[in-house]
Amino acid sequence: MSIRTYIVDSFTDKPFQGNPAGVCLVDADLSDPAMLRIAQELNQAETAFVRALEQPGRFSIRFFSPKKEIALCGHATLASARIAFKVLGLEESHFINIEGLDLATRTTADSVTMSFPAYQTVPAEAPPALLAALGLKAVKNAVYNKETTILLLEIEDPAELAALSPDFTALLRSYSGINGVLVTAPSRTALHDFHSRYFWPWSGTNEDWATGGTHTFLTGYWAERLGKTRLKSFQASARTGSMDVELRDGRVIITSQANIVLEGVLHDRG
Image 1 (spheres, helix red, strand yellow):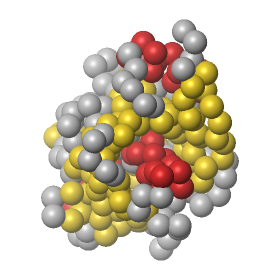
Image 2: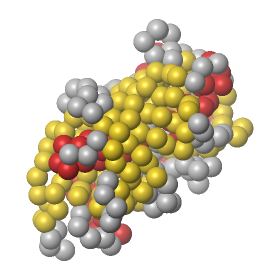
Image 3: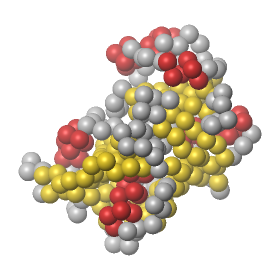
Image 4: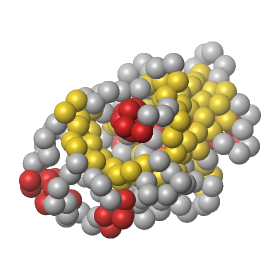
């Protein structure tokens, strides 16, 4: 079996920054073990498996990290939309995930816009062991999103956020039952409204460099605090990433860029 395969750097206008995603264009459904094996081989934060459906411009999409299937992934959806535009000539694409969500995208030569669900958060507790593993002495707020099973921690200083160097072994031991922990802070410049970093050794790599899925609830979180529905987000990871986000008609609209850095054919003889 030969699979057209790409690596795309998402949430950046420069190659080798942002978040790299694998994109595999498949002609038929693969087994879950086969998709996990391929995701482990590509060794990106997530790999998207995209299969065309009967209706033009509609695709099924499955996301796998090297550890497990992830229901919703922003950067791999962005990457898939860029591939649909370049390879198939589609300006509008609809990606249907395993939960039946329609992730609608519109792509131009310069950008990709995605429509994602808008999720809520509820108050949560941050255990001292988790804070210690992250290198945090205190947090301003802690909330939880049930759809993504992610814990959100707000801190005061974006410089402290950028400097975090977690002990990932201790972080795994400090909490269970979540996919990851998102740390966020308000921006101190006019370039962005808020910063974030996402750590997810429970379900993927240690750090997700630039994350669209967390903005399903992070957008509403900061929209409420800042009193605005259009915001600019910066992910303060080593590779960095940025996106424009907007709350519109009960959805989160995410706009950013993506660069195709590798294309080829994957041969699966397993």
